[in-house]
Length: 161
Image 1 (tube, rainbow, N blue to C red):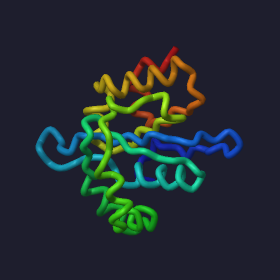
Image 2 (cartoon, rainbow, N blue to C red):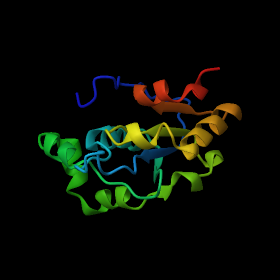
Image 3 (cartoon, helix red, strand yellow):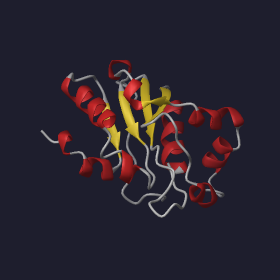
């Protein structure tokens, strides 16, 4: 598994949401300058599950720009789902044209999913846009499921009543 803290989640078919916002990190470098970003299987596998279950998926990132962690591409060479996605220009283009998270309308989505990667440690916890969309979806009780990595849940205390 790419991320030991990421547990598989069931997608109930009967009450299935129809539109999901998949959020990527905008951080593309570690503090030492070496490359990082969103982790390929932690975005592509959930994306594929959502699409297979009939969801429409839109992509966002904190600043509207996001880079895939190059090490995650190398680490996923034997992962057919990741390589099929990454080697398909049309699919890869989905990750290259995301909206800024602050421009996303929470009312337009049934769920928000924050994809993993090392970059998320720097921009997700401090992002007002991430906090706002989570708070809004929680407060207005949109029939949503907030799917996030354990790291995000531990970093954003506003999720706890």
